[in-house]
Amino acid sequence: METRVQYSWEQVEAFVRAARLGSFSAAARELGKAQSAVSTAIANLEADLGVNLFDRAGHLPVLTPEGEALLGDAERLLARGERFGSRAATLATGVEPRLVLAVDELAWGPALVDRLTGFAERWPDVEMEFLFGIVGDIALMVAEGRAHMGIMVPLADPRGRRVYAEEAWRDAESRLAGLDYFPAGAVPALPVVAAGHPLAGRRAVSPDELEALRQLDITSRGGERPDALSGQVWRVDSYWALRDLVRAGLGWAYLPESLAASDLDAGRLVRLDLAPAGEVWRWPLYLVRDARRAPGPAARWLLEALAKAV
Image (cartoon, rainbow, N blue to C red; front, side):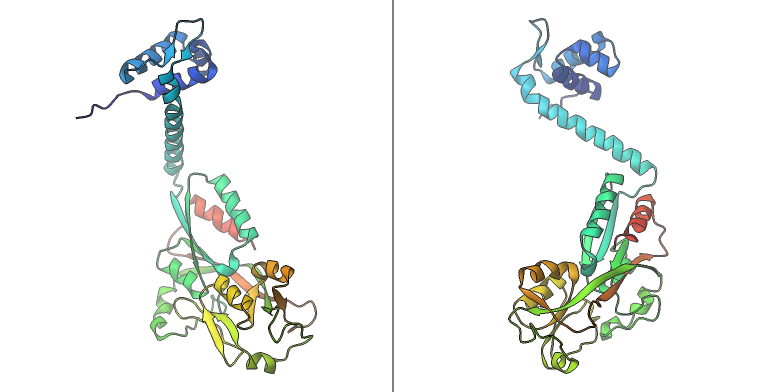
């Protein structure tokens, strides 16, 4: 049966400080203790561990090979202990240990990541999880408690009546009744095709031409989908997959400007001329949260930050 070695935080801290500063007296000054207290703490640690950590033959203590081998472990132990104390102090103030953010793929981009970077700096001990979806998926994640909040692009103003395409979603109204929605900007959308598509390079494209060619569009995992303009539609529940289908020349689609930008610059995609010069279609973004659950300090901070992210 293994015997557990018993040692204290003070002993480990004295060992690390003395090793890094090169003397027991310097460690004592930094710790605000008497040199004798530091020397005793290290001697007791050596006795508990059964190894000599320092060679004391010279004027200043020098790490033994065993001390060098154990120093890294001791430093990591102190770092974990400091994190333990910091996180406990944070949780004691009511800060949430973990937040889950549901994100419509349209909303993911540099502005959002910038706000999340700020969140990580302000709340370093809060764990984050991100769930992705399309349109109505986001609201359902929040309503069902899988996410604390979400950023979504609805098919209609979510503060009004909602309509779902699939029979299985007929009870969605009751599940979404307790949600609050807040306008949070908009995402520019561009009509695009692959460079080799029949519509590429046309100065103006008519609705009849769009209707005659395959449209690529999105659908939520629950069956919510926008109305199609074309007589033939392929649907997918990911904007990244939608972009790949457009790249392959399989149809035309509206893509978020941030997702299409690099392909447009490289000439792989071409923007269609559908609207008056300079006009850009924009998808409205909404923050969504469950009004029945009061947000904690970190969630409130994130909600306020996300309202300015797009």
